[in-house]
Image (tube, rainbow, N blue to C red; front, side, top):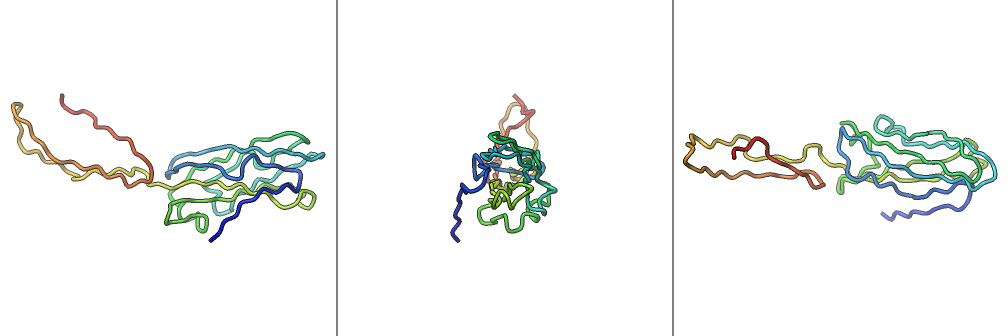
Length: 174
């Protein structure tokens, strides 16, 4: 598969980027990033910023229908709050081999025939497991230990997430 990204010079609108880095996302978290739309035209337009319908429970854009005056720039905030069904709802926007999602966000005007084809910015990120660290064995039996001896046991930590995880141990004896 060959993916080609292009910026159109046709029409009054210009995006400051064609890709938004949503970084590594986990279910239950909130991730947001902005992008800018500039009106290079001579008229005031009402923009329409659309995300795929099946992802509206997980993603929103603010404002979704801003009014942009000639020569001005408006900032659109993309907010992603993936729920537990996010992976199923992503469908064709998710690559299970790489755990990467790429969600198209379409920017057009209410009068699309006056402004040309919609511009597209892609929200790109990776999906990771929530609580990706596992410890083994689950139960650690050190037996009967007196204060004058040292007992050593092997403990293993496994990171099943796609990103680095930080961990610590609490209430350890001195």
